[in-house]
Image (cartoon, rainbow, N blue to C red; front, side):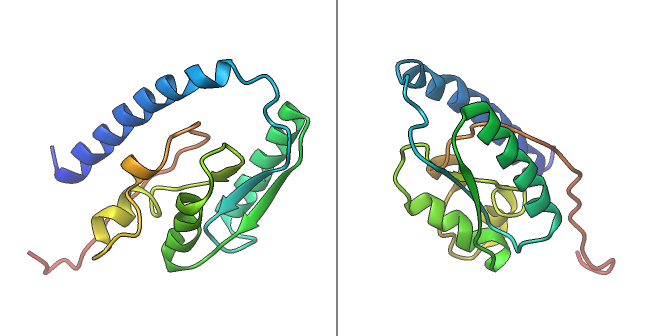
Length: 141
């Protein structure tokens, strides 16, 4: 098993544990959400992640009966928007629509990462999936 596969496996196990543990305090909250939810998409408007996030935001708005705004914070392969969510209040009103590139792959490739997706974020839901392929020059060792 490669380092990448071990990291993804660890991320999946951690995300499941965090989801289960994080849901207990939410049971006592009856008034959530009481204000607009901000869904940060760390990529440019009009791209596939943005389109998918906007459909998801519409579903959340219907489910919660509360406004959900999509806020695109593009740049640095998703790191700018992700770092903004890290700095936000941990109250559930600022969500990150993350992808493999700005979460798991960012920590593997960044020289000085601004965040660690395992330590700085809690997984709320997995809303989709896609294949991720890492390639290199054929002559690379």
